[in-house]
Image (tube, rainbow, N blue to C red):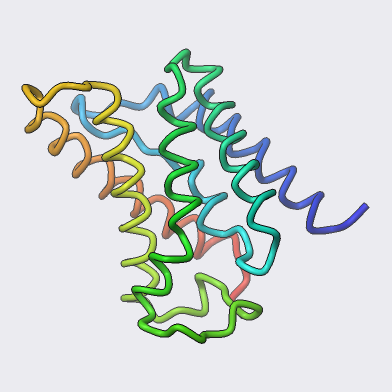
Length: 168
Protein backbone atom coordinates (compact mmCIF):
# COMPACT_ATOMS: atom_id res chain seq x y z
CA UNK A 1 0.00 0.00 0.00
CA UNK A 2 1.17 3.51 -0.75
CA UNK A 3 2.86 5.37 2.13
CA UNK A 4 0.87 8.51 1.25
CA UNK A 5 -2.43 6.66 1.62
CA UNK A 6 -1.42 5.15 4.97
CA UNK A 7 -0.25 8.50 6.36
CA UNK A 8 -3.40 10.33 5.28
CA UNK A 9 -5.67 7.57 6.56
CA UNK A 10 -3.99 7.71 9.97
CA UNK A 11 -4.11 11.53 9.97
CA UNK A 12 -7.80 11.45 9.01
CA UNK A 13 -8.74 9.01 11.79
CA UNK A 14 -6.60 10.72 14.44
CA UNK A 15 -8.02 14.16 13.62
CA UNK A 16 -11.62 12.94 13.71
CA UNK A 17 -11.11 11.15 17.03
CA UNK A 18 -9.19 14.07 18.55
CA UNK A 19 -11.85 16.55 17.45
CA UNK A 20 -14.82 14.47 18.53
CA UNK A 21 -13.55 12.99 21.78
CA UNK A 22 -11.47 15.86 23.17
CA UNK A 23 -11.70 19.20 21.39
CA UNK A 24 -15.46 19.41 21.00
CA UNK A 25 -15.73 19.17 24.76
CA UNK A 26 -13.61 22.31 25.06
CA UNK A 27 -15.70 25.44 25.01
CA UNK A 28 -13.69 28.02 26.92
CA UNK A 29 -15.60 31.14 27.91
CA UNK A 30 -18.43 30.09 25.60
CA UNK A 31 -16.51 31.22 22.51
CA UNK A 32 -13.34 29.19 22.14
CA UNK A 33 -13.91 25.97 20.30
CA UNK A 34 -10.90 24.79 18.28
CA UNK A 35 -11.42 23.09 14.93
CA UNK A 36 -8.04 21.48 14.34
CA UNK A 37 -9.40 18.81 12.01
CA UNK A 38 -8.96 21.30 9.17
CA UNK A 39 -5.22 20.58 9.38
CA UNK A 40 -6.07 17.81 6.92
CA UNK A 41 -7.18 20.40 4.36
CA UNK A 42 -4.19 22.65 5.05
CA UNK A 43 -1.55 19.91 4.78
CA UNK A 44 -2.99 17.86 1.91
CA UNK A 45 -0.60 18.07 -1.07
CA UNK A 46 -1.64 20.31 -3.94
CA UNK A 47 -0.37 17.94 -6.61
CA UNK A 48 -2.87 15.18 -5.77
CA UNK A 49 -6.14 14.73 -7.63
CA UNK A 50 -8.61 17.45 -6.69
CA UNK A 51 -11.70 15.22 -6.92
CA UNK A 52 -10.45 12.75 -4.34
CA UNK A 53 -9.28 15.63 -2.13
CA UNK A 54 -12.73 17.23 -2.21
CA UNK A 55 -14.35 13.87 -1.46
CA UNK A 56 -12.01 13.26 1.49
CA UNK A 57 -12.62 16.78 2.80
CA UNK A 58 -16.37 16.29 2.58
CA UNK A 59 -16.03 12.90 4.29
CA UNK A 60 -13.96 14.51 7.06
CA UNK A 61 -16.60 17.15 7.72
CA UNK A 62 -19.36 14.57 7.46
CA UNK A 63 -17.58 12.36 10.00
CA UNK A 64 -17.45 15.25 12.45
CA UNK A 65 -21.13 16.00 11.76
CA UNK A 66 -22.04 12.37 12.32
CA UNK A 67 -20.56 12.35 15.82
CA UNK A 68 -21.85 15.82 16.73
CA UNK A 69 -25.28 15.47 15.12
CA UNK A 70 -24.79 18.89 13.59
CA UNK A 71 -26.67 18.42 10.34
CA UNK A 72 -23.89 18.87 7.81
CA UNK A 73 -22.48 22.27 8.76
CA UNK A 74 -18.95 20.91 9.24
CA UNK A 75 -19.14 19.08 5.93
CA UNK A 76 -20.24 22.26 4.15
CA UNK A 77 -17.52 24.40 5.75
CA UNK A 78 -14.76 21.85 5.17
CA UNK A 79 -15.77 21.27 1.56
CA UNK A 80 -15.89 25.03 0.94
CA UNK A 81 -12.37 25.67 2.23
CA UNK A 82 -11.06 22.61 0.39
CA UNK A 83 -12.51 23.89 -2.87
CA UNK A 84 -11.09 27.41 -2.49
CA UNK A 85 -7.76 26.44 -0.89
CA UNK A 86 -5.74 26.75 -4.09
CA UNK A 87 -7.31 30.11 -4.97
CA UNK A 88 -6.53 31.47 -1.52
CA UNK A 89 -2.96 30.20 -1.72
CA UNK A 90 -2.49 31.73 -5.17
CA UNK A 91 -3.82 35.06 -3.85
CA UNK A 92 -1.51 35.01 -0.81
CA UNK A 93 1.61 34.09 -2.76
CA UNK A 94 0.66 36.48 -5.58
CA UNK A 95 2.05 34.08 -8.13
CA UNK A 96 0.19 32.34 -10.88
CA UNK A 97 2.98 29.94 -11.74
CA UNK A 98 4.46 28.80 -8.43
CA UNK A 99 5.58 25.20 -8.23
CA UNK A 100 2.77 23.09 -6.79
CA UNK A 101 5.03 20.04 -6.62
CA UNK A 102 7.19 21.55 -3.90
CA UNK A 103 4.48 23.27 -1.87
CA UNK A 104 4.66 22.77 1.85
CA UNK A 105 3.08 25.09 4.40
CA UNK A 106 6.33 24.95 6.40
CA UNK A 107 8.31 26.17 3.40
CA UNK A 108 6.31 29.40 3.23
CA UNK A 109 7.55 32.49 5.06
CA UNK A 110 6.00 32.92 8.51
CA UNK A 111 3.66 35.75 7.51
CA UNK A 112 2.32 33.98 4.44
CA UNK A 113 1.81 30.66 6.21
CA UNK A 114 -0.06 32.34 9.08
CA UNK A 115 -2.16 34.30 6.58
CA UNK A 116 -2.99 31.11 4.68
CA UNK A 117 -3.93 29.22 7.84
CA UNK A 118 -5.82 32.23 9.21
CA UNK A 119 -7.91 32.75 6.08
CA UNK A 120 -8.89 29.08 5.78
CA UNK A 121 -9.72 28.90 9.49
CA UNK A 122 -11.66 32.17 9.47
CA UNK A 123 -13.76 31.14 6.47
CA UNK A 124 -14.38 27.71 8.01
CA UNK A 125 -15.46 29.17 11.37
CA UNK A 126 -17.60 31.85 9.74
CA UNK A 127 -19.48 29.25 7.70
CA UNK A 128 -19.98 27.00 10.73
CA UNK A 129 -21.34 29.74 12.98
CA UNK A 130 -23.43 31.32 10.21
CA UNK A 131 -25.10 27.99 9.48
CA UNK A 132 -25.44 27.21 13.18
CA UNK A 133 -27.23 30.47 14.03
CA UNK A 134 -28.79 31.03 10.59
CA UNK A 135 -30.10 34.46 11.57
CA UNK A 136 -29.00 38.05 11.04
CA UNK A 137 -30.28 38.86 14.52
CA UNK A 138 -27.25 37.06 15.96
CA UNK A 139 -24.72 38.80 13.69
CA UNK A 140 -22.49 40.00 16.54
CA UNK A 141 -22.52 36.60 18.24
CA UNK A 142 -21.49 34.99 14.94
CA UNK A 143 -18.62 37.46 14.50
CA UNK A 144 -17.50 37.15 18.13
CA UNK A 145 -17.48 33.34 18.10
CA UNK A 146 -15.81 33.30 14.68
CA UNK A 147 -13.06 35.67 15.79
CA UNK A 148 -12.25 33.91 19.06
CA UNK A 149 -12.44 30.42 17.58
CA UNK A 150 -10.27 31.45 14.66
CA UNK A 151 -7.54 32.91 16.84
CA UNK A 152 -7.51 29.88 19.15
CA UNK A 153 -7.63 27.41 16.25
CA UNK A 154 -4.89 29.17 14.25
CA UNK A 155 -2.62 29.17 17.29
CA UNK A 156 -3.17 25.46 17.91
CA UNK A 157 -2.82 24.53 14.23
CA UNK A 158 0.40 26.49 13.80
CA UNK A 159 2.03 24.86 16.83
CA UNK A 160 0.87 21.40 15.71
CA UNK A 161 2.30 21.99 12.24
CA UNK A 162 5.61 23.15 13.70
CA UNK A 163 5.83 20.17 16.05
CA UNK A 164 4.66 17.35 13.80
CA UNK A 165 5.72 18.17 10.25
CA UNK A 166 9.10 18.21 8.59
CA UNK A 167 10.48 21.43 7.19
CA UNK A 168 11.36 21.02 3.52
